[in-house]
Length: 171
Length: 178
Image 1 (tube, chains in turn red, cyan):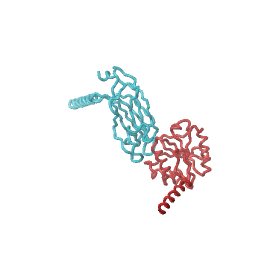
Image 2 (tube, helix red, strand yellow):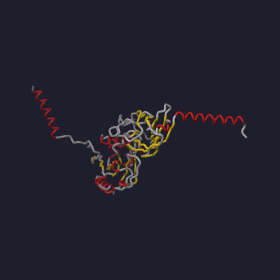
Image 3 (cartoon, one colour):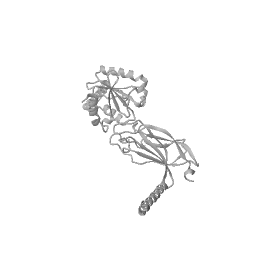
Image 4 (cartoon, chains in turn yellow, green):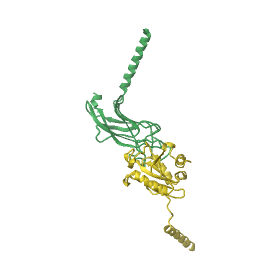
């Protein structure tokens, strides 16, 4: 009888512990906006045309990136794009290769369905397929360094991460 | 001056070629209805009559080198939102009427990577064909149809084209089948 009571009390106290001290969530929210300024930190934000002029927003984001000592990079993606979503899933799943590749980067995501494709809103971002990444300088201007999915083969972390790491960090 | 045997040989070849050409034209009549390139995919639309006298509306979608298209059977909004189907469709305003199912020239397959329900065609061109009934008449008529497609490689995607209306001139049934 005493043993049963002890087990019940242990169960209740475990539940109470979980309720009172919930585990910190490290997973990403549903939206693509994801900030993880941790030791190997990187940041992912998404900009929308309704938020303002792109160049102004990029300049602001580049300042935030500098404050975090991260490299600002623009990524164009779309919800219908399997390679883009594969990258997103790998990052959200905390794939170690992808986390290492993304380390110290500040990814600014722009959805082509919102921003258009070669639209005037995009200023001089020129591309003909996604995903595509543009490095920015500390003022939010393009550095001229660009990479797209064509640089790797099948969209699996083992292929993507080394190429991205070289692009981001020159490794 | 050609020797007679060469002359008769040449005539023979010409007759054979003419006979072959007449045979092929008897097998199918092919009328080009439209062709365009949008979002890096070449699309050509034809009307053909098969040996049984049925009319086939067909569209050939040719993506850039190394790119593939998605199965006609994935949802219009994509498989879990991903990809877009390859479709050749009549619209509610079309004068042509469907007389069969949409048929693909190549079989779609499960992708090497990614969701299993996101069926893809092998890299390269795909032709979709739809058996149709032509409207009555003895002249050309304006008609419309629509196409949907999206091209991706293993790691890149071009933007999709969804329900693009295409205006075409089609012959009346009596015009081809008096």
